[in-house]
Image 1 (cartoon, protein in one colour):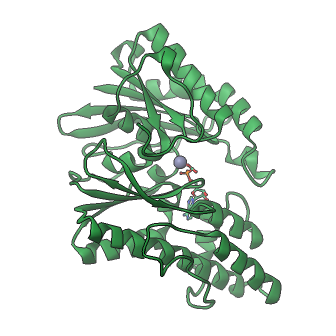
Image 2: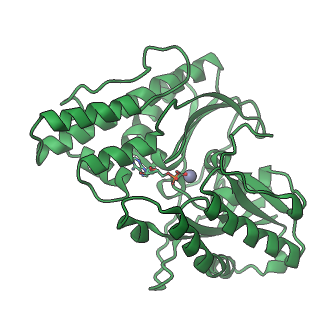
Length: 358
Ligand code: KG4
Ligand code: ZN
């Protein structure tokens, strides 16, 4: 089965072609046109600007995905598109494009929940070589990478989704079943990374820049709070931690190495807030697999610490390759295989779509 995936929930215009074979998922093309440089000058994503750029890029990106995959529209079995959560004006571009293609090409259209797709990213690819194409529309430059193989995922699954807008702990008893166990009560983990990065004077997008700086620092240099760590529920909180960093920077002279120490200590506090609760949920629900997904899953320290803790528990740890953690359409196409087709006329964007929505 050949699935075209389309993703425009935030500031990446993305299209991918994923093939589901008896042996697993093969990513035939994965094209991402990022708007990072455009939004960098504003220090964050400007929804109106993002939507306008999606409009200009969506067709060339879909065209590039089909060409890279060497797939003609007639060969496609389905189209999968992100319907939410995300920025409403950005989502509309992808959904309306997908509706038009589904109508003209007469293909089933699958609405995809973006957060679920971050989890389904752990399923790809079971076999074959994954080619990621970072598609720079202006320069026409392509760069490609090859990603490792993986084995079958066993249930129950505990999934931690950590992105720019969400931090959620989810139980999956089967591939279609999502139960929200807990979530952030205020900022998302990625949002905290981005805001603290700004406080440290780092360039946008802050998360990866902060993580790179943290590599040079001492994670034990400053003892920042681990909010809600002692509570037995599965909820998280990052706004107090963010404020603690702000006060620390106000009260201490921090330059050079000291800045790296603050970055490393903040990152350690985020990791310590996320890992024990995820492990506790895995133990409680006797999870066979723990999945880490979302943009913050690209963080080395989080991957390492959660991976070690899950291994100690005896469960299987799955995290997508680095490039598949941040927004892309291969994860949307993969999610499209698990999803159900809906009449294209009835598909609506849903900016606040919960992960456990029916
Ligand atoms: O999933 P994603 O690409 O977009 C949303 O769905 O929100 O996640 C983006 C978030 C941003 O907050 C970004 O700063 C963060 O993921 N991020 C990271 C790293 N790479 C991306 N945070 C920490 N360390 C990283 N290496
Ligand atoms: Zn995302």
